Length: 194
Image (cartoon, rainbow, N blue to C red; front, side):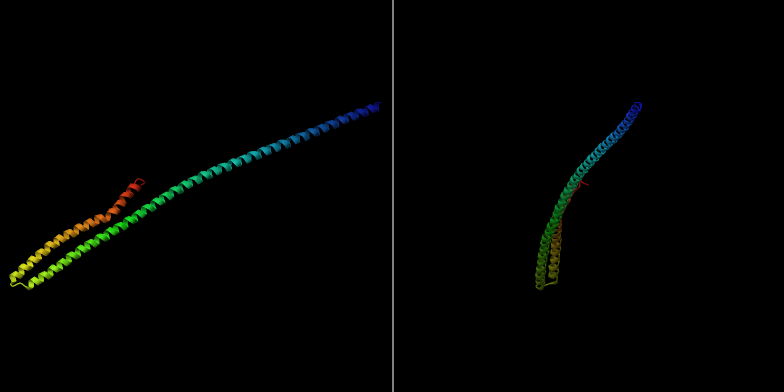
């Protein structure tokens, strides 16, 4: 019996040893599985965190892009408004130049007509004086006629020069009036910006 008990004892120890080895293996296996699960959980959490960070980064980038796009649109709108204002102002300048040119042309025509009328009257008076000289009977009468004619011509020339000067000054004022108005408008409109 002894042998059998020894065998049984041996067997029990062997079974116990086997059982301890199996438990150790199971413990290692469970620890490995737990480590794998923990690693999977950490990887999943890290992936989720990375994914969340990427989503937040993309959202922030999209918001930044939208804000930048809004600023660009705002600046473009301002630039377009400024361009439109400058075009309208330039058109007004062109119209003022055309108006000044029309005023100058009309005024110059009026002054030219006045000069032509004066010249024609002077020629007619010269012809009349020449005819009158043909009918004089003495040198004294001829000298008196020429002296009177010269005096009348000088007085008319001075008077006509005054009229032409006045008309020229008035024409100058009228011609530059549209241009002066544009300069005043430019100072009012753009002077504050400078």
